[in-house]
Image (cartoon, rainbow, N blue to C red):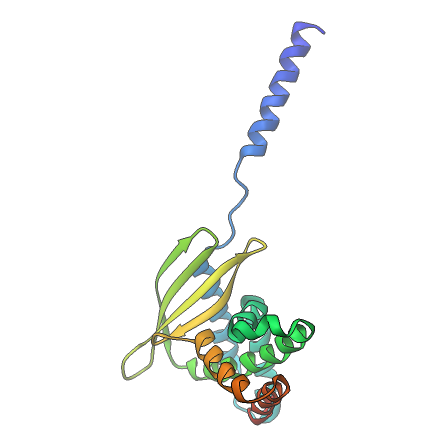
Length: 203
């Protein structure tokens, strides 16, 4: 091998190593993800007309689509069920499906009240694959409500696994409620109660 060829191969190897060590484009920050989701929701709410049940159903469907992209409902379901999760290996997917409908329905109802409010994005904390984004919902009158989003990194994207409103964790609140039910009733009873709440909210 000639000296020129050796130099060429060495240069090619160095280029390959450098290229492999270059950082890949980073994912959106947790705060950017939260802001994007809330902005989409507010756009849907502001563009919608209060024109009866058909329009309301269409708007709710669009809001649920937005939530499904940002929330890790499987992880929320696992955490909310707590120690009972591992006791129901054959029915975990069934629970995740019903729990997702329940949370989406509940959260959409709350989002609909944000139409005339302002959202302040205060700060974000990132610790490796976990993050928290602090926001405040400011109504036209009255005090603002602090809302903290807890996220983790899944497949290169930040997904919400808990929401803390005025120091009350959504996941911990559900876990407490579900545990009380399962201490005196069956797993089927819990699923039935969730489905009844979904129906009552007009899902």
